[in-house]
Amino acid sequence: MEGQANNFLEDIIEKHLEEGKYDSIQTRFPPEPNGYLHIGHAASICLNFGLAKKYGGKCNLRFDDTNPLAEETEYVESIQEDVKWLGFQWDQLFFTSDYFETLYGYAVDLIKKGLAYVDDLSAEEIAATKGNMEKPGVESPHRNRSIEENLQLFANMRAGKYQDGEKVLRAKIDMSHPNLLMRDPLLYRIKHAHHHRTGDKWCIYPMYDFAHGQSDSIEKVTHSICTLEFIHHRPLYDWLIDKLEIYPSHQYEFARRNLDYTVMSKRRLLQLVNEKHVSGWDDPRMPTVSGLRRRGYTPKSIRDFVASMGISKRENSVDMGLLESCLRNDLNKEALRRMAVLDPVKLIITNLPDGQNEMVSSENNPEKPETGDRKIPFGREVWIEREDFMEEPPKKYFRLGPDRVVRLKSAGIIRCTGFKKDEKGEIEEIYCELLTDEQVGEVKVKGTIHWVNVSTAKTAEIRLYDRLFTVADPAKQEGDFKEYINPDSLVTIHTAYIEPCLAEAQVGDSFQFLRKGYFCVDKDSSEKKLIFNRSVGLKDAWVNK
Picture 1 (tube, one colour):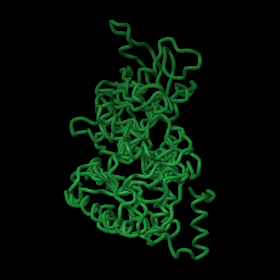
Picture 2: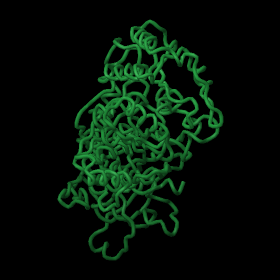
Picture 3: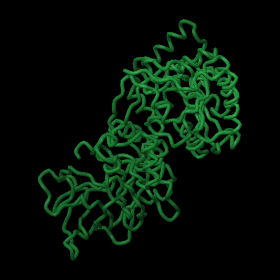
Picture 4: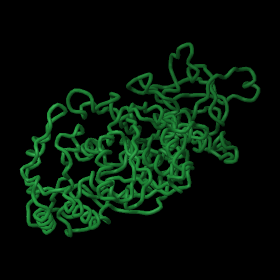
């Protein structure tokens, strides 16, 4: 956001540019294509692309596709769509798999320098030899193989002569290093699996720690920005670049922001999808970018949310209300106003003729006068919200009740003259009269309600979405995090009445339904059936809950 003070990353970049360390900066956004992006990734996108834009640099999109068992082309495509939708365009598009041959050559170089070796220990055995903070690790019995033997064994690994897990390539660093990650970390493992881009060409794949820094170096990334959990990986990042004598990219860490009332782990999100607790990755209750987009979030609202969180070195949680507030602020300025009745009861204006409709004017958006007014049909019978009438209203109830007056939005002032109940005792019809100009001058009206004309109303399904979980941090609760799913996170109204002009709404269009909140057209809509998702209420109702 404009006017904000620099964050620590901006201070670092400005210092580097002033000192002439770099002529321009190069950043990158490097997701693994093993799932859909969520709001945490959106923060990283805004940061990396935003820094490049602010300082006249460039930002690449690079897919870290080194695990063929988890990655799919579907995720690659969705990630590209999300980045563009958020309002960013990468300078160049890369895949770590583009560098497989180069990375293999780097590994061979380390072996030739006596800095890497092929190990026969299993993953469990390697973990057992790592030691801990008080106890040094134990060297593998294969650590001192000759360079020639390691080169041959590594070539055999590439040729597919061994089974998964039979051998790995490890860096030869220090088994007593205070950073456990530096105790001969894995560089390559065997995976006989089909890769979404390289097919069956490779059966060995670089570990993240080996591919990450070297890919940055290949692309001449000046500021490699990661989240705080990678701070312990930085010594290995620097060690590999130093020993390989390649372009000295450098890693910087910032703290991630966790969002309340959801989960951000891809593993947990995948559970929600696979176990059908949600309809898919783009379910409007999910914290994924595609889910937020489907719910009605705008790119600007998400960018504003990220900017309002700021960048720091300390992790914390962010109230969901902040995200909702950013959307509310954006849609208040941009969304057209329309009327929709979600829980209808019929109101009959007895002093209007049967079958006659007149057109009344109502503003499209008071925040944008240039959007003008629209014409709405109004007649003898209208739908109003059931909650807008009470048989015995309390003192501060300013809506409709026996012998009470209320303003029908844009149509005039009515006085209740009676009502009728059905066999169950529910209000079935409400009778009112439309006041004349002379009568209006004699009354004080404190309430305004919305309505939809019965004879011209269209119908729609309304999906009322709420927070997916009932607790702020479900991942830290006792038991299975899914036990805390909010049973009321989706309430469906199968028949609501809407203004006739809404029949022309297109998928993704957003509106403010007067007095009800902000809604957008869902992708499940068809010519025969419109479906609206509630994006956010007019105010934060969760606090009261």
